[in-house]
Image (tube, rainbow, N blue to C red; front, side):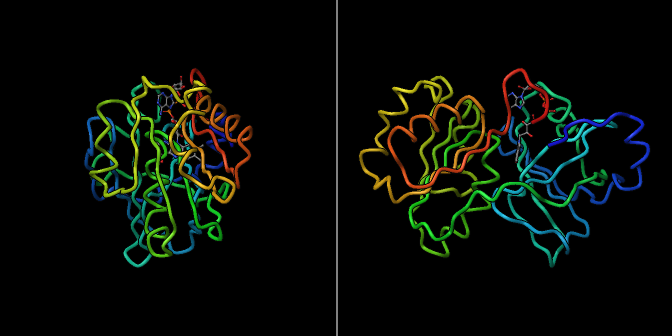
Length: 236
Ligand SMILES: Cc1cc2nc3c(=O)[nH]c(=O)nc-3n(C[C@H](O)[C@H](O)[C@H](O)COP(=O)(O)OP(=O)(O)OC[C@H]3O[C@@H](n4cnc5c(N)ncnc54)[C@H](O)[C@@H]3O)c2cc1C
């Protein structure tokens, strides 16, 4: 996915990348998780679980974010941002205030949800909370069995609970999703019929890779994996 564009290309497509939504509400669920509600013409947007919207965060930089919730009748779209403090996207989003105008692309990408599978397990971090919020109403409505596992900074531990996400286990980032043995010993593998389950892995690329490796060794049902960010790398 393109994360930066040369300035001349930006100028060429200036019309296409012009702000198309307005910020109508902002709040902080924790000091580092910001919820922003955008309003605009989203009638033609195709929202699928796992798709992301690209947001223009500077003249030349674009970043991917997931719609946590949308309402086409009201023309609103909510996104949960991890304000991690290391990047142009994070800094830009932190400054966003009511009435700011922003460019958001139509959603596209990888579908991460296989509705025919009754048991659904999600692993992720702060960047995956929006995905969880987008999937939750469908999981509830269709009476899937589901569980969310998050690795979160201590200041964000309570965020899933505050957002009404149930069936959730939160680990500290100090426990490590990057340790194969630790992942392999998780109690979920003892209680779940893993051959019948769907596993959706998102968030930190290294954690996703570790989980994927362990799951492959354990022979599980379906694995859908997409790293959302990589330490030391700008814009995935
Ligand atoms: C399909 C998809 C959906 C996504 N959905 C969301 C979403 O809903 N909400 C959300 O917050 N993010 C989401 N992300 C992740 C987001 O696009 C990245 O975190 C992105 O790198 C942020 O851009 P930035 O400009 O802040 O940092 P960058 O300029 O990309 O990176 C600068 C530095 O910050 C580090 N960094 C980047 N992200 C993080 C992080 N989360 N924590 C700690 N360090 C980080 C990088 O490793 C790098 O060293 C999604 C990504 C993808 C691919």
